[in-house]
Image 1 (cartoon, rainbow, N blue to C red):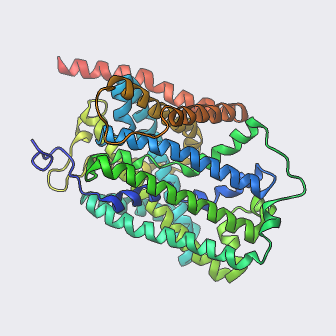
Image 2: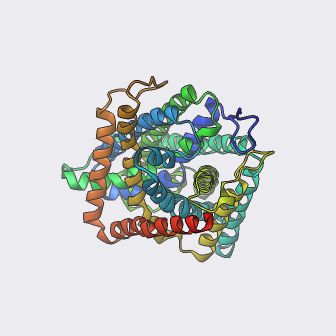
Length: 444
């Protein structure tokens, strides 16, 4: 039975531009407008800062190329969940879904929706009391649009990807206007010292966090046209565009604020625009950041819902969540569950610590997800693949080992958050076996 005939399967409606926009929109949220300051605090010169962003981009590109092969081999909704289930079994796959689809995805949606609401309310003159209602309203609107299927969600996403790229261009142009021959001063300082290896890895974490989200296209792989060709192209082109944007934005920050000014700023994009255009400039970039964060929420909700739906269809979550609406081919119940939980987190204000606790777990699952490539290569050695990651096994090994090194450095630097992250993952083990026992009793 073909996809078009099976009402419980997705339809392949996403073209190359749609898929590339998902990659760009899933990576560029609000992080680049804030986390550059954190990276500057952990470095002593502009050169070190740009080196970290370049290394983070190259490392993420290595991961993206590996995901391109995985997506071409298994072009199904669910992404990492599917790879882990096939390579390592249902328990690791459940732990991924438990950590990401039930905690990290809704937590990140709640956090970024609140960031959107902060900037949106500031831009139109609403007070702080409107932030939570605006964030909840944004999530409700996004879920409602995605109820109509992936094409409706893609049209909205394409629009907000263009708007967020417009915000990037505005920041870069401002940096060019303000540079006035001072970029060399901003790139270096009199007290530049090489970062020790562990300090370098620790400083890399906020960079990797800002590059996160590149996996959302794999979550939506079941709806990509000609996925064996489209997935590698969209992942590569999208991430390459992100790396260029991030390097240019950081150059603009350095040009306008200097390294010390960037390290001291809590809102570098607004501070930069304020120097050139005054308060109207700060309000203008606030609108741009609101568009950027709104677009990210759209992708996170769409991708996270596909993981939840796949878990439900697998019997690893409530069966009702595994249903796909026959007319729109959208996982409407999964969308409602994910969006509803994110709204609860917004209204309770409890998402901040959840994100701190799951960042390590997220990148740990990225490492395990890439590691499944070794299993696929060995298990299907005689099976041709439509796309193969170049420089295998070097690229996946570099990605996995570097991510594990960053996790190790983070654990030494923040043992509390890292320990809680691993604890949340491990709590899923008894939940998995309890769920299996309940399902077996129901089957009797």
